[in-house]
Amino acid sequence: MTTARPCTIADTLAVVGEKYSLLILREVFFGVRRFDAMARNIGAPRDILTARLKRLVEAGLLEKVAYSERPPRYEYRPTAAGVELQGVLHLLRQWGDRHLAGSPPVVFSHTCGQELDPVVTCRGCGESVAPGSLTADFKVPGWGASGAV
Image 1 (cartoon, rainbow, N blue to C red):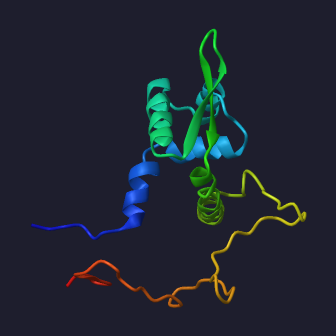
Image 2: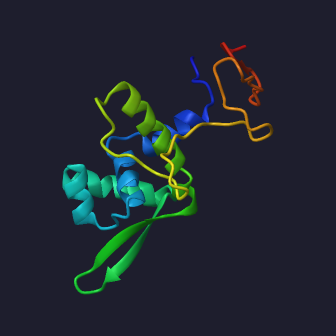
């Protein structure tokens, strides 16, 4: 029997890896909170958008807040856990800008006025993470870099 490597990347993808989930988060970070606007901006079928929103709420990334009682209407706001994914989206966008787009369709600027160039850095020394600059300390018994040991 083969067991997959224990991995929080896989666990995270189980939550946000379905089609449209990251696009929902993109819209929420742009300030789009309501279903109809999300459906228009994402282009997702309404039943699928409903299912993805429900999943993101259940996973604790979004909260569903009523803004109208009659008829019942809701908006979706990011939770603290959801906000933590904003940097991941910027890194994905940056990769797409470099490797997929002819030119970036959106340019983000920081409050300092400079164009955003997200990087992953070491918490201790502040150096950018580069290939070969990391080591892995496997915390799950029986697993190493090459797989099950």
